[in-house]
Figure 1 (cartoon, rainbow, N blue to C red):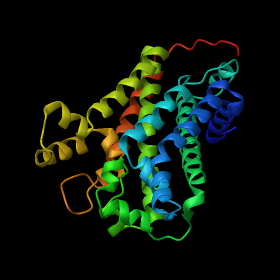
Figure 2 (figure 1 turned 90 degrees about the horizontal axis):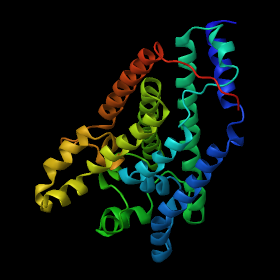
Figure 3 (figure 1 turned 90 degrees about the vertical axis):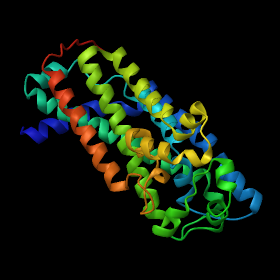
Figure 4 (figure 1 turned 180 degrees about the horizontal axis):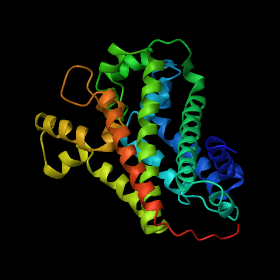
Length: 296
């Protein structure tokens, strides 16, 4: 078996019993509850004004908010608390492949599992709101009401005039999903690197600290702590927009040609650099990692 074939074999092994694992089932069930709670505000607006929404808008407004991305990603700490996955057959694979190939399989397992989780969240959000949606790729009347008035801000719904003027709903949904994936991948890869270097418990704490770091750097949180007025918040918005991974994951927190915030492309490059660094740290930690094999 060649190198790619060996990597595929380990990936398949990692996914064995994936949907029978109690921890995975609990993660997806909690994701359904989370989507239901977070999308309630969007449904309430559509019901109150008796207006429809474009099919992509509920996901954009729900997970265009950094705090909601944070809440969704926290479930990944539960989902990937056991990485790197090692079982009774792991010695068999390690005896027949290089450690770096085995590590590549762990990277792919995390990446694919996160994509599956994010796609599930997107699908659930769309299904929960389907009674009020239409498929056409144009912004809805509900979006106009939220974006061009103070209604969106008052309800915490990130309907963005800048986005509506520069992109279609489905393109915006794709970019929102990609940013969410990048943030989730950095969280999971950080857990992997720390697990390999310091042990599984430390990896969970690293994931929680990473999430807390992003939460505390929310512009509104800093503004309340420092007691800043509304006109004084611009510099805080720009600073946190660049140094906070969570703000890089928030679609409305980007520049659309009007300010000094990072663009979607710049945020994507920064996430890729961070992922590369975490990948290198994981590979370096793997060289000194002592495997402990326990039966299931």
